[in-house]
Length: 188
Image 1 (cartoon, rainbow, N blue to C red):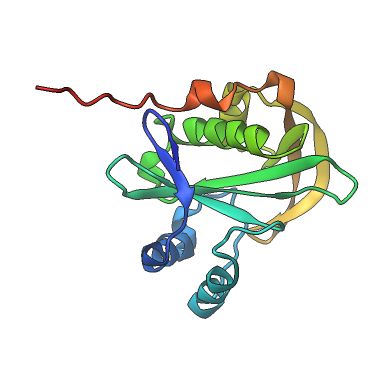
Image 2 (cartoon, helix red, strand yellow; image 1 turned 45 degrees about the vertical axis):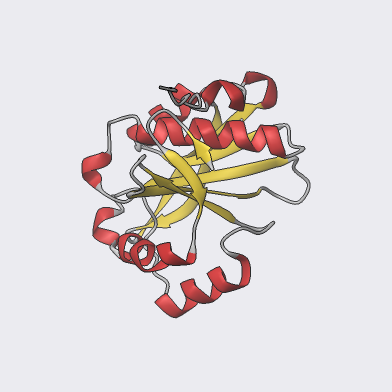
């Protein structure tokens, strides 16, 4: 588990699946910049049973508050085979949770974890042009814009451009600086 000051990131558990599917499947709450995709509950369960959403081609960390309520997820996956990079994607389940720093902390923790545990030199993320909130998350974590990927994603019946951002190992905050301190129990 990655325990931050306000959020916890952890792999999904089988007990999370029903709630995760319910939250992830409601495309109304995904926002205008999330591709309109759906998967059957059977397909989601099958992939979870095979990999636990923790594999070389795709891994997913559930974002929860400190009481365990699911807030969203951060996924990571390899870039092109010739790249020494991982790409991340992320989403909050409820629009009411936007604008509270949840995703900024979650992305920072994920980046710190990836550099602490993987032999990679960069993490990248692509954001649909116009998604100011997602762009700000990346900039706050230290990502830099590299350029525009033209006509690369299909969203709500239209092809859209994406901005490519990256952060290099030497630019990222170390994971140990991002984790919440372990609270010492008082002895009486």
